[in-house]
Picture (cartoon, helix red, strand yellow):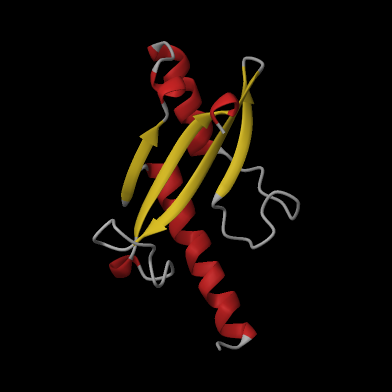
Length: 115
């Protein structure tokens, strides 16, 4: 088992990679659920911009400090973003989300009604 210093370093690296992906949509795949995909182009653009600029992580909504799950409101509607970690074959979970060579990040953006 890894010691707490190494585990914290991994969480910090995962957070950095998640933030870089979420703010740029580079370095992984972005999926929109049917409800988000069906939004008007302008609303969809607004939702995507809110994902990119989300900065409301705290101890309550991000207990592990990895910035992998978040929610936000737009025009009175609640949305969620979730980053999952897959192995390069996209068939299994990543064995090491802190290592970008072993991980493909997938960000799913959904309306709260689809959760």
